[in-house]
Figure 1 (spheres, rainbow, N blue to C red):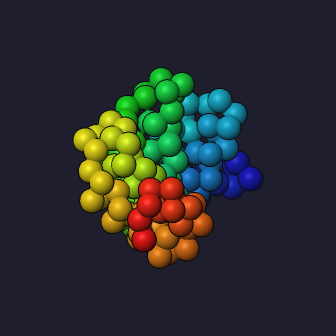
Figure 2 (figure 1 turned 120 degrees about the vertical axis):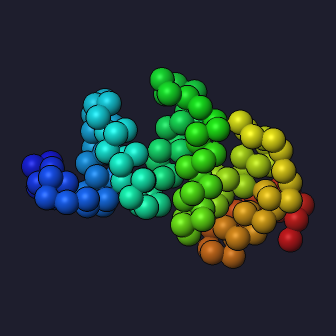
Figure 3 (figure 1 turned 180 degrees about the vertical axis):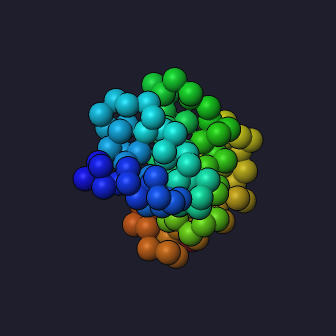
Length: 130
């Protein structure tokens, strides 16, 4: 599988192959996985955008940076990722690495709920909004 994915990447900008191989490499503790995930994210892969954001938001990640996490969560949300919408909403709500902005938090959490996220629906109840 790895050789196949590497071949796809070598023969073009296959963002899905970069995303999958990046996950495999990161799971094996190989730092080049982050490079592949960032390449896939830069090519517009919203799943990769969420993963990159998650790594930047992880305090155990050497590149921990909540502003970078927000950048990637917002890009993924704007690209239609429900997980990205949820993550950017909670980041706006709590102010993690960015100024708190309840209006933007409510906008994104409603959008995530409207797009089918049960977690967003639960969070709306928790935050007392409709």
